[in-house]
Image (tube, rainbow, N blue to C red; front, top):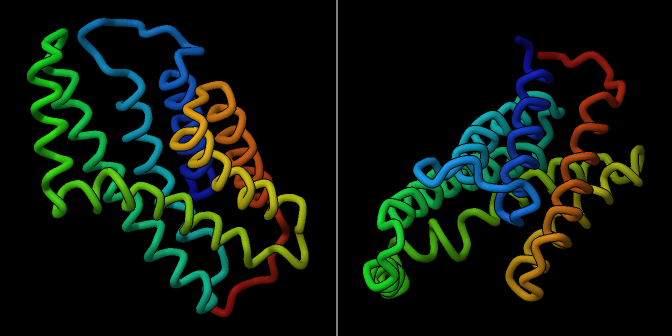
Length: 184
């Protein structure tokens, strides 16, 4: 499997996770949290984007942000796995949620800020193509902002999936932009 194929696998898993999160895909099992498993696997495969884009100064910063965002997604998925292990016990879930909210060393890097770094990093990668592939780059940039806005501000699952689809499609199209041979 080459790097571009890893990127595409990541995009498919990532988009599928958002279909589960929005409940457009029904939960297949009470005992397995497929949405977060797909998100976790997808995020890990998205690390491959750090290898396919040119090695400019901007892309080096984007690679760091993307990597930090993936680490944060792993942490967030772990928190959500723990949360789902409580089943229907809403009291325990509320207590865990309160504990996480009161713990800045968990809340900010793994819930509030960290996961957004994945979107920010990939949008910054896309930004390097804004002059040559403006539409594709803008799909990624607008999609990344819209995912966060639709989730946090609007709390609209359908808009979140559409935003993620725009983000994923833009990244997928940028994978196949012809690039000059690298010096490396």
